[in-house]
Image 1: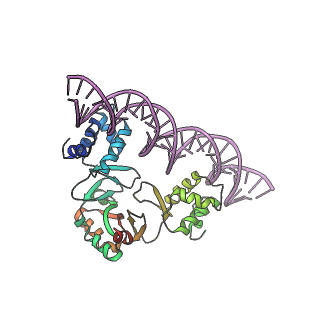
Image 2: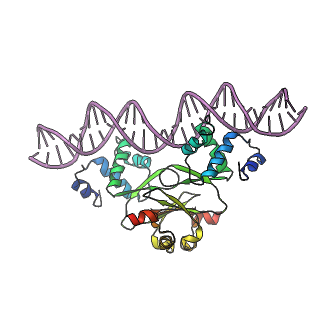
Image 3: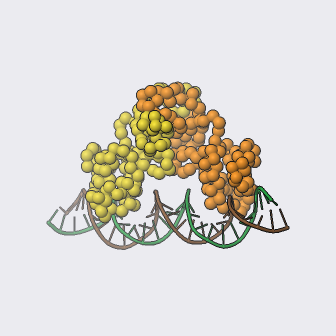
Amino acid sequence: MTHHATRTLQELGYRLTPQRTLVWDQLREDGGHLTAEELCRRVQSQFPHINISTIYRTLELLVNLGLVKETHLGSGGRHFEVEEEVPHHHLVCEKCGRVEHVHGEDLNGADTALLKTRGFELHDALLFGSCSACATTA
Amino acid sequence: MTHHATRTLQELGYRLTPQRTLVWDQLREDGGHLTAEELCRRVQSQFPHINISTIYRTLELLVNLGLVKETHLGSGGRHFEVEEEVPHHHLVCEKCGRVEHVHGEDLNGADTALLKTRGFELHDALLFGSCSACATTA
DNA sequence: ATTGCACCTGCAAGGCTATTGCAATTGGCC
DNA sequence: GGCCAATTGCAATAGCCTTGCAGGTGCAAT
């Protein structure tokens, strides 16, 4: 297990099981957004015995510890990704399903504009549209 | 049934049933974002016999005809609202759950910025954060 | 190394939301 | 009024996720 997650888990009194290690490793390795089922399949290639309920319980734990972030990408399904230091927003292509990351400064100050006009403090933006590849095709 | 939905349905060869009329009426009346279950409960107060599967089938039809829009508000559940002429984005308060609408111009040109920097054509933004009431409390 | 035990896991059952097959009903045209 | 395909209600089913429980296992103390 790379990263400090090992330490974090143990320092807080949680056991370091192979299941937890593998779930964390797969999330880090992928870099993208995995569903619980996808994650389960990948972990099973290295540890066939693992059960989907353990995946869910581990994800719940990691999310509560702030190590993993749950995102909804519009389809109704839940996706999970490693929580990063620099928060980012998501661009989701409605045609090909591709997901890109953008940082706050790329939104042209929309956050401060919303704060001024609405008193709304933006944390997380989910932006649906057509990605560069699909927009030109259409 | 207000609006032109009546005509639209009949013109396209669909039957105008009381179930469909009531679903449409409730969606218009509410103005907000209803789940299929909420919608079912409301319609049942006027038409107790209606079944949830009819609600789903009617929603599917109305969505396909462009009369209703399905939105995911982050919780994983599906919500439905009347499709409006002027498209809007959603502000979702992560604390109290309140949903507000904002129009494109309130995003400070974030859409054109994304188009320039990423070639991404924004259709629909789902913005999570703290609404004015909750932000001041926190 | 061994032991002990609370934590963790696997399994199976259950819950919730949404979909589907089918028989009965019904809107809308004649 | 009568016909017939579109529509509905019902029950069964499918996904996704959660939970209860019995057995297994990290890990700290010995």
